[in-house]
Image (cartoon, rainbow, N blue to C red):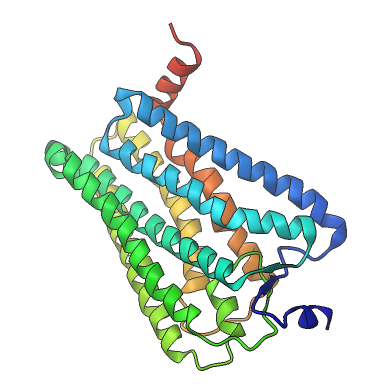
Length: 308
């Protein structure tokens, strides 16, 4: 009742990750540490790629884009998560809520497309090594990166415009730690069939399309590696692809579960826990899986730590 009385204005009230006073302090310290770690890891990757010519290759160009995206991505949702843990339920102006939603959708769409571009890059490198310099020349890499960023931006403009145009009668209480699509649809007191259709179609385009490209690329890589003579390099390549697939599998499984359903879905604690996986865990783990386990990155990291 108290929260309902607070929601008479145009603001949105975020309940946050946890309402239990006794655990919020510990969770705040934990997630603040994870946030800073994610920023540090991705900043390190960008610095290494920009400052060492050995890493001026298509694969690292995409990894640099991914690290920059991860820094923006985690910075969109983590401040509101930390604010909720610090203060409990709190007001967010409707404009700020829509702004957060816009950047979140744009970045998550860009990430899906970038992951597909990275999978295609590995497919060309392993399955067509002789044509790699031509197929992945700088103009192609730049085109793929720009398409990824613009694609996420266009999808976000469409989805955010549809959601912002709905009427919200209150109480505007979101059982979440950031402004997300399904919780906002649940607040609307007007028909949302068209918005749900737009949301579903855009999910197919931005989620399922890149996922299909990535899966086809990795299947082709797997088949090519199995037909090659056994060697340590092939085993290493297969191991690298497998680790990439694990990260992609976790990310896409959660994202598709939460966003590929063309209907309103009740915001539950399970949804919040799943959201933590792709908003906090994957930005922190991606640099480790994609770069810090890579031998070339290890070499330049050692050069940075111990310059001659």
